[in-house]
Image 1 (spheres, helix red, strand yellow):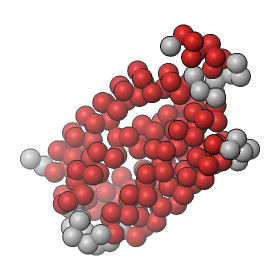
Image 2 (cartoon, one colour; image 1 turned 135 degrees about the vertical axis):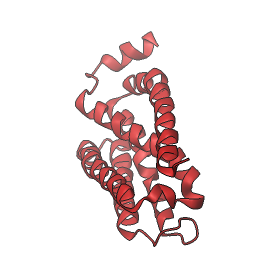
Image 3 (cartoon, one colour; image 1 turned 90 degrees about the vertical axis):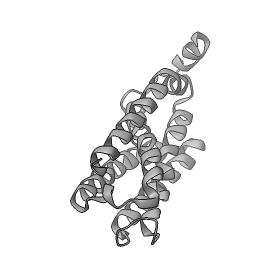
Image 4 (cartoon, one colour; image 1 turned 60 degrees about the vertical axis):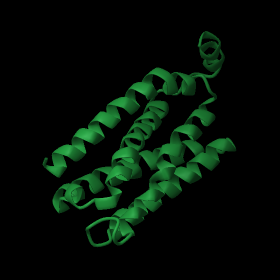
Length: 166
């Protein structure tokens, strides 16, 4: 089977599963938490992007090392980590860092995907295939959850109502 078709079948199927679990179970629980805590938890999906450095490991992928992709992932993971810490300590930087993660992380994700099409990366993932197929859906969904939380924050006082109704 064509590796690109197979890759995207697996990635889309995995994304559907993660979307269902997130929308049915995770997002209602996040909405019941204090705003900073919900953003903190959503940003963990971006913090794991440091794993994109797998693209530098010779023999794991059948491509030359992708320094641009790896550096982008480390920058995004660092922003997400800073956002996690800021939100945990209820710093005023928490929300702006979450927005920076969304804008920079989303842009980087689009760029990496476009570069993947240009290089035919799906045919050269070798040992990284499973990792990429398993990690891509939660990263995309975590980015979407962060956007949802930023666009529609729960009003102060509503968290108690939601948690008692769950």
